[in-house]
Image (cartoon, rainbow, N blue to C red; front, side, top):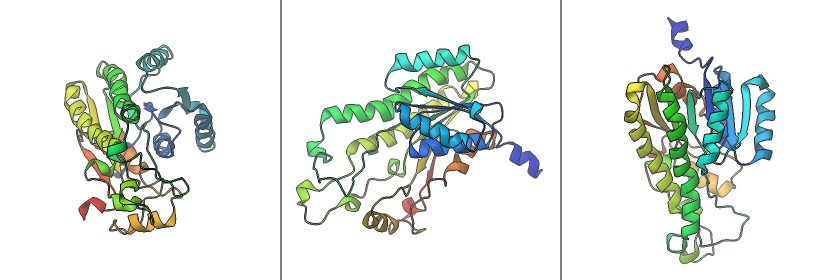
Length: 280
């Protein structure tokens, strides 16, 4: 019985495509998929980082199961071209992880700027971030999801949202001493809009191709430790019941669950994994 349950986590003979695959979590998603037996197609616009990610993954897993493409998720022609090439090479995408995003960071070593504030946030930046984080997920779901719907095996779409899809950013985390209130840096509006939008898109997709066996869920991670300054880490950790930020590899098992038959009856859900922050 236990073996039967564990077998449901297997992704052997499945092909998974990860957008934003050269980023911190993109590479972690790839580790999770490879560990479960999938062939992974890593896509990103940064070829240098994409190569570094593949080299890192190849030191642990068979490099023949790791395929990379430079793909711009805002360019539908680019996405369609890669989709067609994959089909020619007999690679059917069974799993799509919409992970690509522009995540604006507030860095302590950078000059304080008020351009992240709502009253100064420009339309060009709004359009650029929405194009990658939300429109990109729509375009990839449209193209690869349609192919899944026409295959007898169906498929899985996993949208990477954020704990900020369920509550607002606590702007006190980003405050800097000696800076006027009108110039304090903030997490910009686009991040919340994109992540909440991905959850809405997930619910839509979960019903759209359900009869064809295509499931859609969202994963909403909390803050991941990645060398942030001590003051920020201390502030954020105080808001989390477990008292710390996530380690970069702590979402792997969730990805394996959500992308495999282990979650075969889960559809249209937003799984928040934030150390309990949203419980307070």
